[in-house]
Length: 143
Image 1 (cartoon, rainbow, N blue to C red):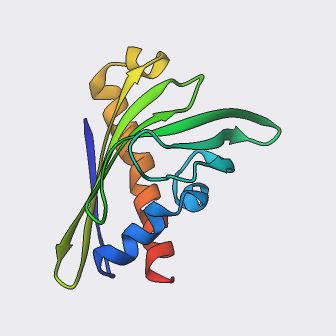
Image 2 (image 1 turned 90 degrees about the vertical axis):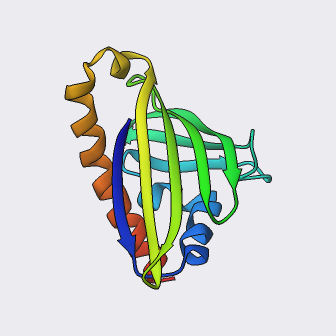
């Protein structure tokens, strides 16, 4: 799995507020273009975000499913973004120095992304997640 980290200057509760608000997903996740629906039970295990990926007008409707959740600490997702495929994503929040160390671990598990050799895909995933964490930090720190 590709692992990306960032120290966010707010406590884990504030970062979790962003993660727990499924409607905010396209604000911080690179590649998510819009939300169509968020299950009422989000982020409980089994709940889904119904989003679109891509650039308008070439948007593809897809979804992300919660695999496991420890409120305020961890969110495990199966993110779908076809035609690229599917990825397992784990987001962890750890209190650190008055802020939060946010870590994203991600790897392709299905589809064309999985066919790319790991030494090639891992840096691409990390590059995308550096920007996603930058956006997450901006949203959480300005709430």
